[in-house]
Length: 356
Ligand code: KG4
Ligand code: ZN
Image (cartoon, rainbow, N blue to C red; front, side, top):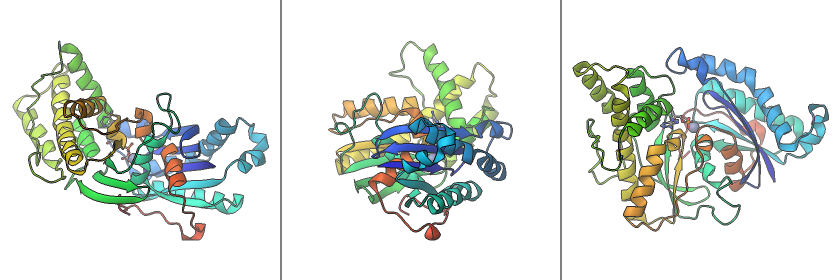
């Protein structure tokens, strides 16, 4: 079954065709992130306007790349699509509406079933997409799976008992992990989006060290880290960074160390609580989802802890470009949770949580 996924929840306009939930036939992403560098963050109205400009060309490109037909043969492209999947939330309402209304229109005109997808649930399915390193049926995640979803606006730890069956274990009480990267990067004068900027600066610092194994990066606090729950609190990090910046103004040479300190503080909290949950719930798989999951240091630290604690858990992280927003995981989520809805009953919902 070929599903056309459409994702427009934030500043990416994405369309993808995925076969049987795992095989990516095409994956096209247009981003307006560069536009937001000037303002240091997203202006929702501008992101939505850019979505309107990009949506049709992006969908066309995804269809052409998937089936290799010229655009003149549109009808033959459409017959190869079995269903449409679309992100309905959470996200920015203006951006969401562009994808949702386009998908509904296509569903009506092309007479294809349409499946609404929760963006946060979608992120998890990056782990079902087949890549060079993973063959279709052998290495896919097994249930129950512990899932950490870390995006720009959300941080949730859930136990996934099967497709569509979740138990929420914990989450952030204030800022999301990605938000924390974005806001502290801004304080350091680094460009939007902050996660990749902080990660790149940290890499510079690590490259200057002989070994990164026993580095003492303890400048910033790790709130709630010893509490026996699965919650986080990241909002205090901004204040701590601001206070430190007034004590010791930064310059080009001190930014890499500062960035590494910030990154380590966020990652330590995420790793500690997730490892605690792995020990408590003994899941068969541990999955990462969301843009922050693209972070190299986070992935390394997880692998190391899983190994050193001898945890019997299947863990493979999706490639970075599948962790950040794209439509391939939306199509995959729709395949594994195939519940088409009449297009008239599909609405954008910016307030969705991972539990619906
Ligand atoms: O999932 P995503 O692409 O969009 C949302 O659904 O929010 O996540 C975006 C977030 C941003 O906060 C961005 O700074 C962060 O993911 N991010 C990263 C990295 N790449 C993206 N954070 C840390 N390290 C990265 N390499
Ligand atoms: Zn996302």
